[in-house]
Each structure stands twice: as structure tokens, then as C-alpha cells.
Image (cartoon, rainbow, N blue to C red; front, side):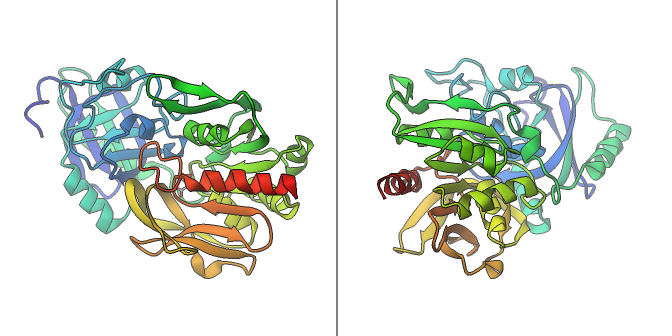
Amino acid sequence: MLLSLKGKFPSAILALADGTVFLGQSIGATGSTVGEVVFNTAMSGYQEILTDPSYCQQIVTLTYPHIGNYGVNDEDIEADKVYAAGLIIRDLPLVASNFRKTLTLNQYLVRENTVAIAGIDTRQLTRHLRSKGAQNGCIVGLPVGEEATQAQITRAVAQAKGAPNMAGLDLAKVVSVKQPYEWTQTEWKLGQGYGMQIAPRHHVVAFDFGVKKNILRMIAERGAQITVVPAETSAADVLKLAPDGVFLANGPGDPEPCDYAVRAARELIEAGVPTFGICLGHQIMALAMGAKTYKMKFGHHGANHPVKDLDNGRVSITSQNHGFAVDAESLPATLRPTHISLFDNTLQGLAHVSKPAFCFQGHPEASPGPHDISYLFDRFAALMDKQKNA
Ligand SMILES: NC(=O)CC[C@H](N)C(=O)O
């Protein structure tokens, strides 16, 4: 437990389903939360991570030891609320400084009703998750003045054990919008903030499985007007919108139960509509073509993952956030691998051999992370240009 936090914040419990218990300080809401505990190795971008809908029902532990140094602001959000089920960190600096800061991380977590624990040996926790695999956990933020009792610890372990298993969970339709909406916001620029697409040359229909705002901004930046549609929209309804391209978004949960999305993706790809998928969207495109997906041991969550482009040998440092992957052994003849992870050789990118469709497992929009692989957004725009001019 870090002495600097003790006495300044109430006590908190972190319990894993295997019975491992850590005690620390509550830096968010009072109460308890459960979810799959995963570790993310990005050094900054905690606000983008907390608001990424792909973290729905996951508790994130950040391996970088100082989290909160630059506070939070109103702009670095990937959705309009915090989606992560909870946050685990080592140290919360008591001074947060940045010219864009509107709140401290602690104030933000309380406002967003997010349970969070600090003062945890996140290195020990991460080594545990890495050797045993991701597992469910429970964080309990205690009221001011209360210390953790054995009964509360036992109850927290039981809550962790009782949490639903991520494998088999369809969360895309849970987090998806209920009504379509239009998107025109473009990328953020220093001194200007976010821009707006006023002269679009493409119309993109984006399936919202839990879409990150920065993906939409990067597609809009390259010339698109975007109609975001609910996860369960049929291919026929998408075709009625006469799109130049279709985007399959990132999102939480297991891709396999998303049969409605798999069906729609198959029909749109076979109809020859230029299609681009990211993360869950990549997994859905692979399933649509007949490949299989599987649950990884602890997944990829970070901002420095090297990925090789198999077409030209180029290596990009990429942002990653996934717990499932496409089984390379299961690829049908219609899909060819385009990218692999240099950490573990797992599949990172696919392209259809005869249709204008491709997808990527990592996060070319970063947020947070390096922009090495943003060329995939250019590729999507080029694919739509080519189809239009054909
Ligand atoms: N970021 C994402 O789209 C994640 C996809 C999927 N939920 C996974 O964990 O693999």
C-alpha cells in the first residue's frame, strides 16, 4: 500500500475469482463492481481507455505506475460515459497538471460513478494475470472511515467468482445505439479542437458495436459523411442508404454470438460494398467469411505492439485492445492474412481475395497510441474512390 495515499482516500478491496486479494485505497465511487480483469500497458490515455466501449464489463489495470498526472478534460473521450467496469492503478499523483484539464482523475471517477482502487502492486497483479490468464475480479470501494473486514473480503471473492464469463457474451448489441445518427466531426488539432466535415465525397454506413469516436473522426477526416447504425441493422436496410462504404466497428464481448452482425457483414461483403472492420469488426468479418475466433489467454491491451504488414514487410507500432482473436488455421480461401503480431504471431489483418473488404485487429485510430498504422484509413478511402470511379 502506498503511504502517500493512505489517510487521504478511503479503503478498498480488490478480489480475484481465484481468491487472490489486494487491499488499497478507493479513488472512485463507493460500492462494488465486477468484471474481467485485464492489464493495459499504455503509459498515457487513461481517459480514452476508461471511455472505450470495448471495455464494457472489464476492469482495467494500468501497468504504468503514475496514473492521473494530467487530469481529465472534456475532449479526450471515446464515448459519452465511462464504460470500463472499474480501474486499478498503482499511484494517483496528488497534483494533476495540464492546460486542458477540467477535473482530476479522482473527481472524474466519482462523477462517473466508477469504482476504482489505487495503491495496488500492479506489477504483481499483472504477472499473476499473465501467468494464469485474465480472470474475473471485484473491486469494493469502502465508505470513509471503514476498514476492510474479513467478511467483506470473503463476499468480494464470492462476487468475483459469480461474475459472468466473457466467453459467449454478446455485448455489442447491449452498448450499441438504438437509433441511427449522422456523424461529421473530424480529428482534433492543437489550437482548433475538433473539426467538421463539410464537403464529404463518400457516404459511409458504420455499424455501432461500441464504436470509438476517434475512429469516426478519422474516417470523416478523409472525406466521409457517416451514418452510424444500430448493431442489429440488416444488410438490406444498410443498402437502402446507398453507402459508398461500410464500416464494422470495435466493440465489447465475444464476437461469436453476434450472428446478426456476421450475417449482415457477409451479405454486404458479397454484394461488393467496400468494407473495413476494426477489432470486433475484424473478428466479425472473419466469422462472416467462415473463419473461427477463440478467446486468448490474456489478450493484447497496450499502445506499443509491433505489427508486421505482410505485403511489404513494414513494421508498425500499434495500439491494441482485444481478448479474442481470429484463428489463423481456420481461414477460408476467400481471406488472406495481411498483418501479424510480432509479439505472438497472432493474426492482425485480413483482406478478401476478390471483394473490396479488409480488416484489422488492432486500433489504427490509436486513442491512445501511436499513429503508425493510420494508413489503413487512407486505404479505406482509396477503396471507396476506386469503386466509385470504376
Ligand atoms: N476493441 C475491440 O473491439 C475488442 C473486440 C473483442 N471484444 C475482443 O475482446 O477481442
